[in-house]
Length: 76
Image: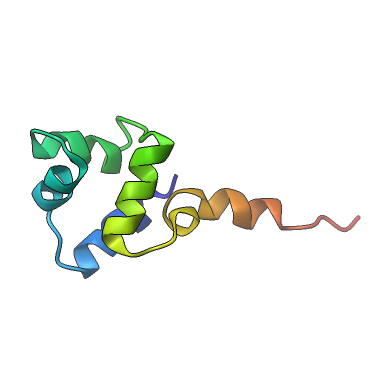
């Protein structure tokens, strides 16, 4: 998961962690902040909801590096 990308996208849209937490149904901002800090991994449903709120593809936010690295080929 690319946590920096998640934070950067959120900040570029002027959305706060409190805003995200409320949209995701968390009682406190720390529920969402823990995702950005890597303390908690979001469920697939939460990841999809985060991507919908931010208007960004879920793969770009959470799986981009895995997809990017797996597409590299090694030539011997």
